[in-house]
Amino acid sequence: MTRTHANLLLFLAAFFWGAGNVAQKLVLDDIGPLLACGLRSAIGCLVIAPLLPRESSASRVSLRSEGRAIFTVSALFALALGLQQVAYGGTSVTNASFLVNCTVVLTPPLAWLLCRDRPGLVVWPAMAAASAGAFMLAGTWTGWRWGDVLCLASALVYSVWIILLGDLVKRLDRPLLVAAAQFTLCAAVFTPLGLLIEAPTLHGLANALPHLAILGVFSTGAAFGLQALAQRHAPPSDAAIIMSGESVFGAAAGAALLDERLDGGGVFGAILILAAIVAVQLPFGQRKPVPSTGIG
Image (cartoon, rainbow, N blue to C red; front, side, top):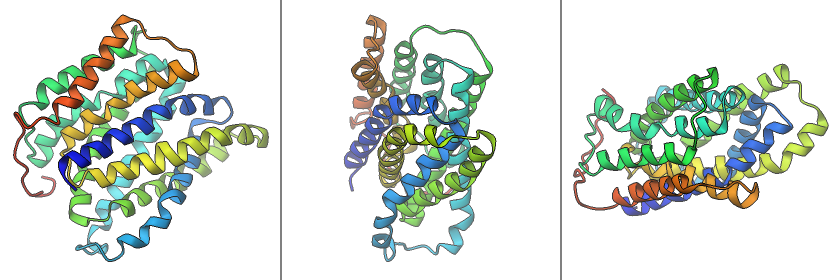
């Protein structure tokens, strides 16, 4: 797989995440955020499970030697996803859509600090354009609430997770196994917590099922599986910028399905994000890839 192919996979993953934003919003009308996290992860695991045997002979590294790294990446994934879902109860969708996209700003310097993965020159202006575009796409800021703090914490955890995930799948060469481990941990933690704390009804679960199917199949199984595959060949900084395209696709889905409309600033913000995604595909200013040396 070339770097361009990897970036296209990330772009497709961003489409699945953005298109699933409507389902992510509507599912909370019937069940709580913890149970939604758990059930979408369980469905996602079922989606990629049939593909796991194809990776059985591909790994060059012992699973036992990478067990701690797999658990760490899976725990960070669960923490970030949980924080994001819970945060929606204490902030507006507008604020959340911008703050979660702060991964665009956080990932490049963290990748440089943790992995000595120095971003190419084109990444810095692309990072600025994507973050400005996310703010403009989000619309009017409504002030800080407790949910905003959780969204920002989620963005920070997502940034570290993106970096560690990329490093792990390059060493282990079993990205779908890593994705399955993430989904399994999420399902094992959040499903019982949701059943215990949120006390869902059978009627609510039945109503939530179509939205859970969309979230589980596309926004979880397909999207995070594609991301894990792509990050063997895409630097973390590029990945964060391309994944910010989720907000553009989310706005388009909201306009198509919820009759939400963007003003002129929102349209310009979407153009900025798409321009940033195109920019990181260009050879100008890109650092030549070096072999992964691990975290530290």
